[in-house]
Image (cartoon, rainbow over all chains, first blue to last red; front, side, top):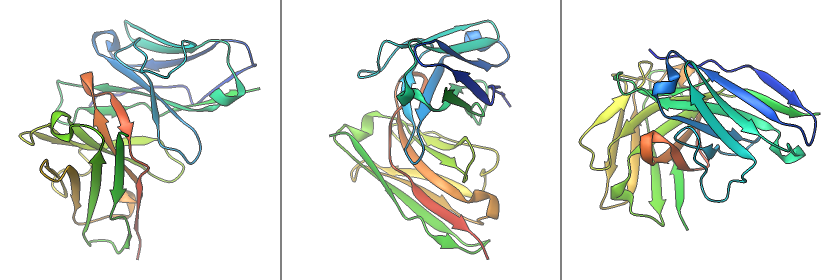
Length: 109
Length: 118
């Protein structure tokens, strides 16, 4: 089955840029989605189809996807961005197609 | 407003069954694929199952295939997850989620807790 690999943690100072990676075999050929989850809350979609943002998501959140790595970039990081972030793809070649990465804890220093 | 509300979570013994429900409102339920995603305590997100907008196709994670069954009633705007032969590793918060293009989940419920313990 398809595997997505994320770093367990990323730390960044307020106002700086955070980059969270999601690795997978030829992930550039798939659509990648990103979710933010704060403690005690349901996940929220922040980027879909590699780089699109749902309405209400700040432009500070952006995404890219190429080769074997997709990246979620958060510019001008704020304290409120501290959360767990998950990448996700739909592996159409599999009969169990839903795949999440293991998640990355973003800490704002 | 667009909303998903799960129910049916409980504490059950290993080997028993449970049925979860997810009531949808505020959107055309019959136009969207629907998914169940679970999260064990302190762990990450784990995709469980999905069903097409019209109920004609279903997919399952290997860990639940043959034990869980996803279904929907578009006339009642409700999604279901029948869980049989429950195991301790099925313990977690179960979310239902609506999918848009390429299976991005743009609406989530607040989850219902399932605890499997003797």
